[in-house]
Amino acid sequence: MPSTRPKVCVVGGGIIGLSSAYKVLQDVPGSQVTVYSSKFSPDTTADISAGFIFPYACGGDQRLLELWFKQTLDRLCELYKRDDAFEIGIAPLSGYAVDAEAPDSIRKYFPDFREVGDREKELYVHCEGTTYFMTTYTCECLKYLPWLMKEFKKLGGNVLQKHVEKLEDVDGFDIVINCTGIEAKKLIPTDDMQPDRGQIIIVKAPWIKQFKLVGDDTYILPRLTDVVLGGTHQIGNYSLELSEPTRKHIFKTCCELEPSLKHCEVIGSKVGLRPRRSCVRVELTSMFVNGRNVALIHNYGHGGSGVTLHWGCAKQTSALVQKFLSSNEFAKL
Image (cartoon, rainbow, N blue to C red; front, side, top):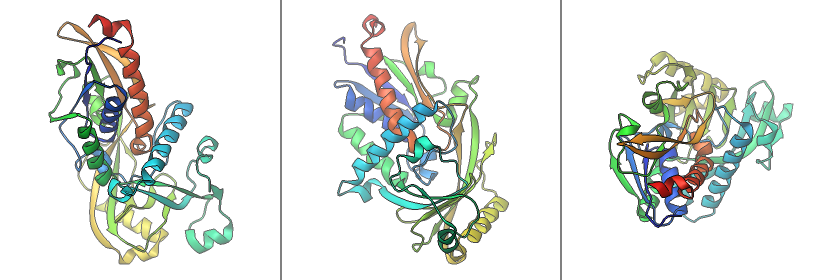
């Protein structure tokens, strides 16, 4: 590997961008890593998410998705063993999934995964349909992203609040990593990315200790200090405006599933755009910037599984960085 200190720019300051930047800095000693983004926590898509660790609304190679999911689950397990796990935003979360897609390849990673009988459904679920019980993790990004940013800076990482109009405008780097989520559609207009609009309600309901997930659209997901009620899947809808009819529908549906929510304190509502495409893209390519051939690594298109897959995708991105740095192409720079 050349002795030159590689200069890496990560475009995107959400969970995908920050985890990728941190992992590259961790794995490539001497590298200079800078994150460019117009938004950081608490204003990213991940900050709106419930942080529920379960593959959700994403496509692609199932073997890769399974690997990235397992690597993320293992990472969160490590973090949960720390005495500052609450400050990091990590906690185990048990509950029920009704008529939710749960491939056999995923089930094996939940040691207590089981189908629920009629009596248990009657007592705890209050909903018809094939029901599974499992324990996973919640990763609350309003805590996790600031912690990850702090760890990145401890390793010597740099951060610049900057809007990137075109990837080719990012000059002075050997490697550019595109982690722009839904904004990738503007940078690569030919991509098949579509927004998957999600609206949620955030409530105070400390008696809700378990999650309930029904199909794709209805969920009650406790975080560390609040509960997220959802939700919607509106493909192709770019609107970030709150819809009052949608809010009423979400609250009504969740109260039917958990009647005690009628007495909860409503904190607010949020809207986010999931970056949905035919498959998650983690790929090494290249581009020309001011006459130089620069490595371009893409890491976007995670749909509703950005938090669920983030660490596995960060590891894959770091591996692609190392692959490029050990190649003849880097030696020519």
